[in-house]
Length: 191
Image (cartoon, rainbow, N blue to C red; front, top):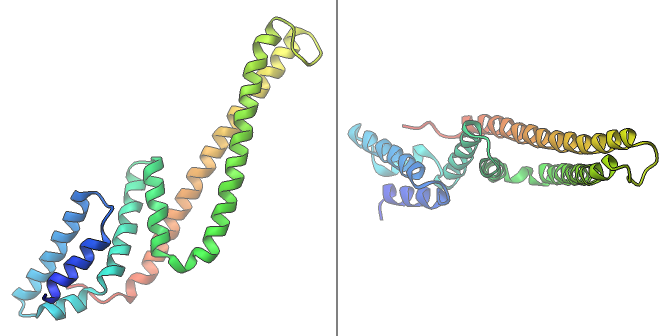
């Protein structure tokens, strides 16, 4: 098998999991690199060496694709894709970044669950407060305000957790971009 085919096969294998049209676009771009290089009289092995390691290149392209998808459309799937892409690119940083992220995720989830509980409790106590049989003392207006305050406080806490999660994902995207820029100069020049 020639160098061109080996390079493209390794790149294709590394791009598995990306949407088919995205992987096909990337592969056709690198096939064009080989065509241009051959038109300039270069051999396939020289072109492949100039493009770098296809496994590492695929990892970088997957990370970049995940980051772009997150920036284009903010969804849970795209957030997970961006996070996985960043971790795939920064495998050595897992020892530092992953424990911090797990602690933040656990804390965020705990606050989110507390917010759900407060919202539910306040919502369930509201009808009892209206008919003045709420478990806490005071008149019906005071009971109703406490119930509404508890429900709205829980909803606010959940909203803060969502905003915090979006902020953490945005920081991960910036981290991935910075990491990509730091390692990009070490890659051989592309033909």
